[in-house]
Length: 146
Image (cartoon, rainbow, N blue to C red; front, side):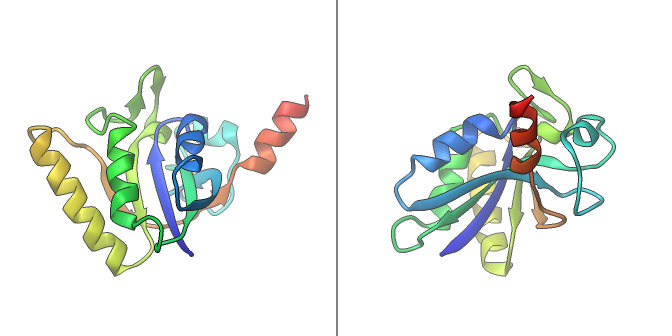
């Protein structure tokens, strides 16, 4: 199994979409790219943590490639809006690919470049090494129980 970590707006909708992909074996929502390896929803929404809302995918590379996951990533969100997706506005809703290794970085660079050509140079998707990933489900479960 391999891992992909992707930021593309509010994580709930994309998590559902990725979960339906053939070859994706597990999804998890969280935060990544911030200043700390722990955070809360309130802190992320303040805009001061530098975290993005992300979907972490576990996938079987024999059934779906990292390249195909990234192509789908570009299909299901708008990679041309800076720090926003639809009505969600803030740096936590940015478009960003967090790579885990050199292989993922190279593939992501190519996919970003391809999409940037298709979209007349308007792609704002960032590419960053994974940093300070933390799971969000525990917090949201407490929120839902209130």
